Length: 530
Image (cartoon, rainbow, N blue to C red):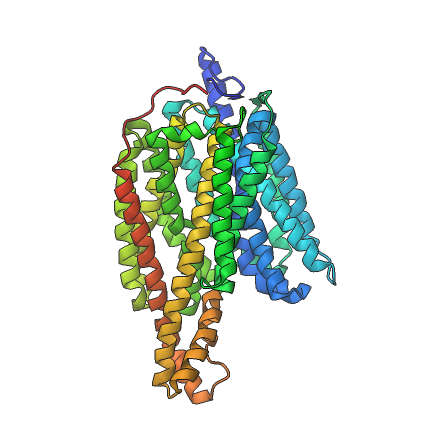
């Protein structure tokens, strides 16, 4: 193995040595799963608890939004730097630093004092959480990739992405139950998970050697500013609006900084990211497919959760269980995708996953207005299966094929792509949801007897509220008879709006299908040089 990571015992020619190596590899996989478990759960768990956090800490609306956004922005800004740190300092060391940082900042988030300091305190430590995750995840992936030989890597990473993907849906469920006790528990739960991760990492005897190379801090600053600024623009689009100049200044400004970053990297002797990685067509296709599939994957948890509450009348706990139907398809498909990758390469899995995902999201969208899970479940399973077939093979194949790059560096790139796709999906599809819902509500308000101008203003206000999960309260300041009429129409109106979102997800999976055909194909059967 030419990379800087290894697991003790790997490569022994004796049966006992092979058994020890296999045990160490799977201990390393388990350790990394527990490490990233905290980060994936925290992407969704805080959203469920945010109303309780805001109420108890007396946070402003901007403050509670930053409790969520601060974490995501730190993730977006830190992935590339985290991957490079894993190369220079060593993946094992960076995983342990990331776990410790995440656990400590989680404990401090849970210990947020009430009073004037509360808002600054919790937002700051949420940013620390996000940056800790950003340095941990690329290192954890690098450990898993290097622990398994290339012939077994697809299956191992299928387990990694299947379990970690499922944990994203655990967030809303865990958040619903834990906040019944105290919202602080959603942060404190990370501490015992961190302890388990550290113990397993020690037991796995992970060996690591960092590279004696300089770190391109200028490049790290540029990519952090570029990614952070553009993701911030996408996030604020829901608040500022797409017509606001600030939205586009952030998005375009951030992308321009990323362009400057690329030019700087081409002229830097030891760059943060070796741009020549993108000379490999398979690597480019893998990342483009990953980007578009992530526009659907993470956002679907938010939109489906809100739909299940507004349109189906579920409570927060039942909404989390609704999301688990998705993983009835995702989990087994992720394992199948890993096996396909190991035997035939990524291309068949990407094509099949994109095709199944397109059909699944399209059928799911078509059934949303039935307002009945019984007519939707098979489509939800298909949608999950499509994403499951795509996610592991695209990520793993990118690592296997990248030219002249370390595992930490490549996983840093792939995680940046994933996070950027998720942010874009939430912003654009969130706007689609709000726009369609407002249009439907306007028609409902006019039918209920409101003048057109009053109906339009009331619909816009109610749609903004509905997009955050409060659509059932639309028009609460209107007369009781009109409220009753509107209340009866809101579940269907919101279903129609969510239908547009899922059709949008079907479209991006169709784009994945087209792009997948440009993959050169073939399985990687040997370790690449770095």
